[in-house]
Length: 238
Image 1 (cartoon, helix red, strand yellow):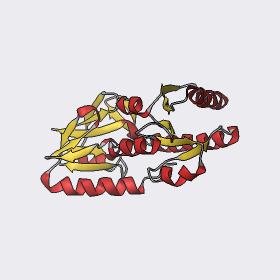
Image 2 (tube, one colour; image 1 turned 180 degrees about the vertical axis):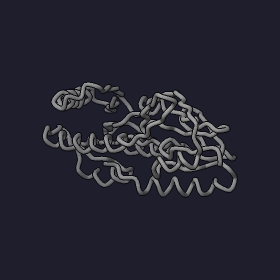
Image 3 (cartoon, one colour; image 1 turned 45 degrees about the vertical axis):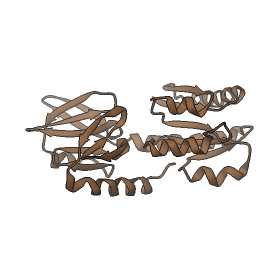
Image 4 (cartoon, helix red, strand yellow; image 1 turned 30 degrees about the vertical axis):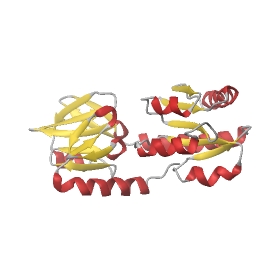
């Protein structure tokens, strides 16, 4: 399911974006989605939800849309950001915070559809990769985008997923590493973390969403920070 958020201090604009979004998703036969609305940036920042795409009004009471985006990025948010503005002058500001695109008010339907096409493609690319975990005669397909981290205990790998589920099976960490991509970093001999979920690193621990923590070895702490910076710089938005 794709999760959207709309943050605008004009109720009429929230409705307009919501209507365009509803029409687009209907035309694309994409019924699995949700939309959350926020009347100011403080309400959005107070939310614990991790949205796939956020429509942000640029001109709001402080923090404005651009500053709100900076705060979200500092928190480690990977949400696609689409700014909505009345002035073209703000275009260069919004791309400083890795915005996916910007839309001018009032919304143009053709431009909106093009923006959504790009955003949906980007989201599909993020979530398409997966691994198959075999347990006896059964198997489970797990999207890489849903794996927060994995750990090895004895002869078993434990895969911790975004929704709290833990899948375990017999394997070696080295073999698991070869099955995942560059978003994963070995922060400890027993732990492999998805950089998409890293919120910081301090005192020998990797900070994860919702207060989660896993260890990072002293010798790997600086490597983790550098890997995280490289990953963020090299990661395209749309």
